[in-house]
Amino acid sequence: MNKKDVIICRCEDVTLEDLHNLLEEGYTSFEEIKRILRVGMGPCQGNTCGQLVQRELAKFTNTPINEIPTHKVRPLITGVKLKAIVEATKNES
Amino acid sequence: MKQIDLVIIGGGPAGLSAAKMAAESGLASLIVERNFNVGGQLVKQTHMFFGSEKQYAKTRGIDIAKILVDDVLKFPDLIEIMTDTSVVGLYKDKVVTLLQKEKYIKVKTNAIIIATGASEKVLAFENNDLPGIYGAGAVQTLMNVHGVLPGNDVVMVGSGNIGLIVSYQLIQAGVNVKCVLEAASTIGGYKVHASKLKRLGVDILTSHSIKKAIGKNYLEKIVIGKLDDKWKFIEGTEEEIEVDSLCISVGLSPLSNLLSMIGVDMKYVSTLGGLVPLIDKNHETSIKNIFVAGDVCGVEEASSAIVEGYLTGLVVAEKLGFKHPNYDELYLDFKDQLHNLRSGPFGEKLRLGLQEIMR
Picture (cartoon, each protein chain N blue to C red):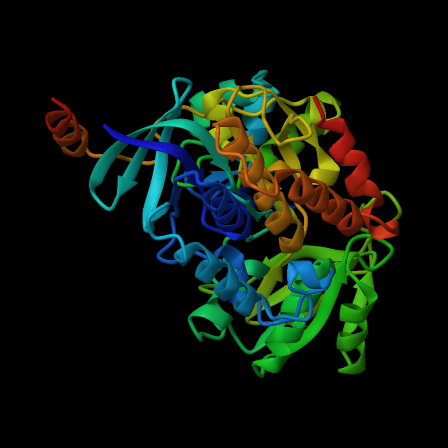
């Protein structure tokens, strides 16, 4: 299998090769991998890649998939323009 | 800041039903829907549903959506609907932030029902990003909502009910479905759906999966292979099939992002589709007044989502001081309906999964 042609995260264009390289370097948690590869930080917020990354982590660390924590989701879930937030605050006061 | 007693996130079968039951009890709610229309995935279901009459069996999904939407529209004073609006933030003090096009809106509420549904799972194989590779649900949206064919020659990966139904609908739309691949040794979905395909001459290849996709600018062919009992490809069993589309239908996973954001207790339960919230018998999560209904707390059929919606709407209204005149009767009826929908051999894994998330 050609790992660089297997897309794991299509939002951030992360391949299976990218992921395996990090695993080999010793990064074996979703949160670490997210910080380096940006998986889960694109438009789909991990809905697509989440399970694929989880499965690879489970395989690599030989852990049942239900014991692999996924990433913490934080607000805001999509891009919001600062202007929109400022305008909402104006209406508040 | 906008104030409303109840915010319902998601205008699919669960969300609409919850709003209806809350309104019948006298409680006002706001339905927030990301899509342009409410109705959820029902709007693209052209087939008739199973179940009992109470969940609109023998009615086409798209017509069930109309019934649910009409029910909600009967309460214009109590139910507000915001479409084309995403929830972007959810906070423990029951503040919900919304984005409606470019407008950022803050809402303060007393209770929240999260009914976000589920999304399609994907597969990791070579060239899985070629144009022409779709989720089966996406193909259904293309065909049945937008009237666009995905291609001419299709292979379906996955023989669960969605895979089988969408294959049949592809054929109805004039597309050549070359075969259905199933990694397991048995067909995943109901026999009635599988039989329909077999009668039309479509092979369902069990213990088979997609190995790689081939194409320059778009999908041209795929390589499939036979799997052993550990789901590993058996060497020498590869076969090439010329296709211009590939549909992936390997299950759904609950859209639990907002639950993670607000920090409710969750658990990974594979039979429910993935990460799901722990709930009590009334669908309340580990955070007071944050409720869930529908596929987000375990992937099931739309019929279950409808009943879960009714149940949750009923309970939330009562908690906020709006008790439905027929509360006791309805409560027992909804519990009974859910029990019936989950009975039988097909519901066994589901029942075990649901036990795991009871708190």
